[in-house]
Amino acid sequence: MPGPRFTPKRIRRSIKLDRVQAADLLAYDFRFACEDCSHFDSEGESCTIGYPSAPHRKKQQLALFNRVGHMAFCRFMEVD
Image (cartoon, rainbow, N blue to C red; front, side):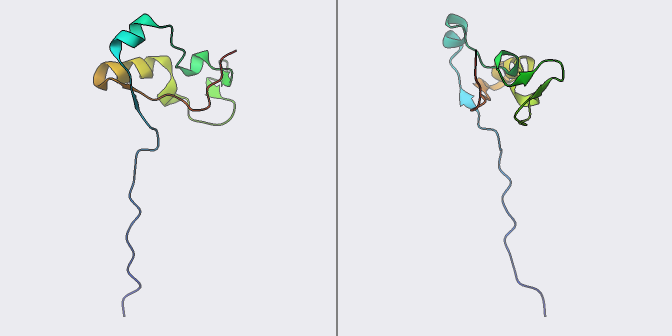
């Protein structure tokens, strides 16, 4: 007799992307990258509270914006 049936868990994107208007990005001085955040350790190039920094780094953010017009804003960003 076969085991119980189950539906595999759907894999979803874990990082939410927000739409950004190009005019707003050019007009305002956004702080959107890990390099601007208080939780970023520049020596270790990592987040001090444990979140992945690669998708939120400035170079990656601008490349994503240029490709699809969205950015992955960190919800825990703090600017001093």
